[in-house]
Image 1: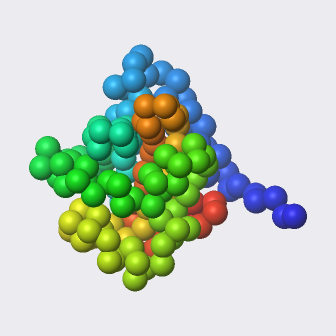
Image 2: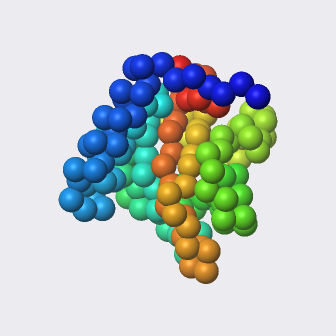
Length: 160
């Protein structure tokens, strides 16, 4: 098995992310810092910190850029979040490892979902990589980071 080699720029970006996150004083600071700094490590057009309550169909989101995060748009996502293949998987298994939407659905199936057509399509998001930070199985709450791209899917090492 070949171990991936990281380029110096990737290592520096990761260390800078860790340094910045270590300096934040609270959860709100963590949320905003991680969505701002993570794209330097794994490039994405939209990066989001999500707290999804699958039991009650509620979502808390901090995104970068944040100009499209409105109560109406969050409500649209909440209405269809039960269709999100990664949320379904994590809710069922508790597995927080990184997953792509393409790990579960082909493009045609993804495009047929109301979730895609009512939320992701209007944001031009075709690809998503999500990894969990925490899960509270009894409450069905999942805390995760989602990296979103318009053009190319994520590869195992982040697509650089």
